[in-house]
Figure 1 (cartoon, rainbow, N blue to C red):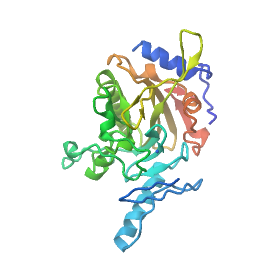
Figure 2: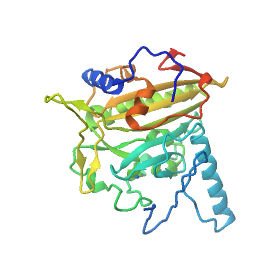
Figure 3: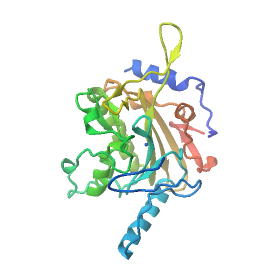
Figure 4: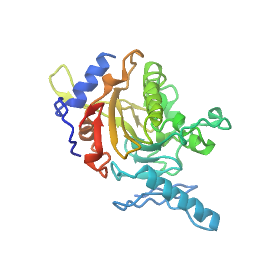
Length: 306
């Protein structure tokens, strides 16, 4: 993905350096015994879990899911590996690491509205039965691990509908996150920042995911090391990213890209400290973001004019 912005930061090693600086400042086929969702990745077409259309009502439900996926993924899929479509977000699942590669959301004022009939306390963390049991995580993996079950698609982004918010509690949408100082604090601040952008832009598109970044050790060699937890060996990411695109009323686009280390962060640290060039996230994650977005409509990246 080539960006036309001139960013005075070297791309090589940007993620590692940027994340170090920030840290110093502080999902064979998809098979289920109960449900079978066949996901066939056809490039350039919306990807969705097919539903048996046994009645006109079910057909309408299927059409609605297809339509929503088209809205969410309007500007392209970052990757095509093990796509899982929910009612209000889309994810790509990493079966080896038992966490998502990425999660994609489309937000605006109407989707983030606080519905008083929606009760988050009724939501339960649930294993994703659409994922083969070899590859999914379980609540027992997190128990006594020292890590929170951290949302990728934020629950707070889906408070308009009880089913939507419950779906964010699927464990396929979770990753092990440091609780105090990160998931409950600075990461939460970033999630709130994304919601606030719906007051600035007509439409907001947000992609979130884990990173496993290299680090040079005392022997002078560079390693990628990360912890795994539970009987299913759920990977603990070293960092997390969010790439956000806001669409203005006149059809222009602005982008923000963040990488935060999975560690306790001083809650007073400004969020812009964690901003990085988006192409550095693409290189580190092996993904391409918003590749269907016309580049001449991208007017700002991380607040800097293109």
